[in-house]
Amino acid sequence: MDVIVDKDPNSIDNIVELLSENGFIPIYENGRIKAIKDRGRDIRIDLYTRDEVGILSVEEIIKHSLKVKILHNSKEERYVRVAHPVHLVIMKLMAGRDKDYEDIINIIESIYGTTDRFFEYGKDILNEIFSEDHILNLRRGLENLMGLHIKEYGENNKHRLRK
Image 1 (cartoon, one colour):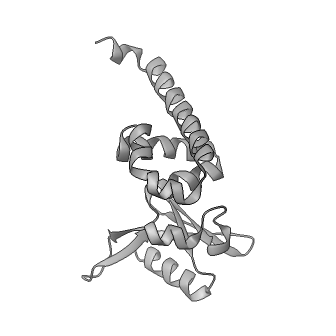
Image 2 (cartoon, helix red, strand yellow):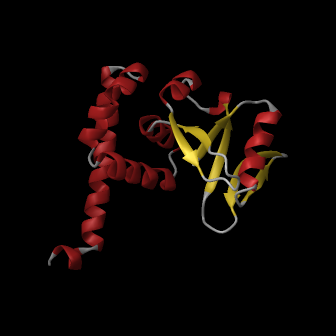
């Protein structure tokens, strides 16, 4: 999971405090908090400041973000804004790690089902960010990634597919 925070130390401190109350511990790199990890599960939340997001506009990410209720130890309800899945896919593509590619596959499969539906439901956001040619290249890249995943799944699960 990735979180964009203000450069204001109070903003970062507030996030760390809230997540610490819910079982997370901070991870430091070069003297600053870079991520927060869940003590009991394999969940890591990478923290980014507004100037670390890359080609995406923070304003656009916030504009399209989704409000999600989070678990909290107190009785009051708490909410956070999370990046729209289309923005998340783009950020994961920019990071380009193997885990990011796995996350992209999971996002597309679990939320949209297919790349066609990803592009259908994400077209307004994608048109704000990319030219038509870039969107076409993105489509080809994601279809290739999903195709490789399906091929690999089939190879690893032939015994299930024969039934």
